[in-house]
Image (cartoon, rainbow, N blue to C red):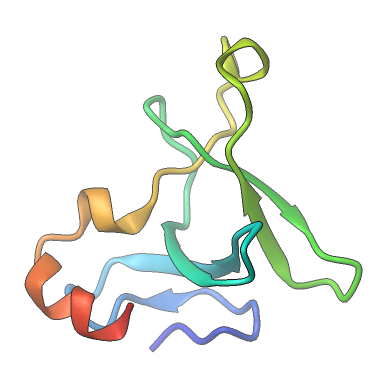
Amino acid sequence: MATTDGEPGPCPACGAPILWAVDPNGRHVPIDLEPSPGGTLSLSQTWEGKPRVTKPSSKLAFGRSNLHTPHRVTCSNLAKLKGFL
C-alpha cells in the first residue's frame, strides 16, 4: 500500500499506482503517479522532501504536460477509497 512517507505504491482500493502528497491545507491526498493530459495538480516537494501538491491557476496550468490527476477522479473503487481519505 502507498504510504504518506512519500513512497509510491498501489491504491488500497483499486491497486493503481499512486502517491500520497500533502496539499496546502496539510491533508494527505492520493494522486495518480504519472502525469496526465487532464491533470490539475502540480507536484513538488516540501522542505522535508515529502511530495506536495498545489493547484496552479488556469493561466499557469495552460499547456503544461506535467500535471497530475487526483486519484479520487480515476479510482475504479471510489467507495472503498473514501474509507482511506
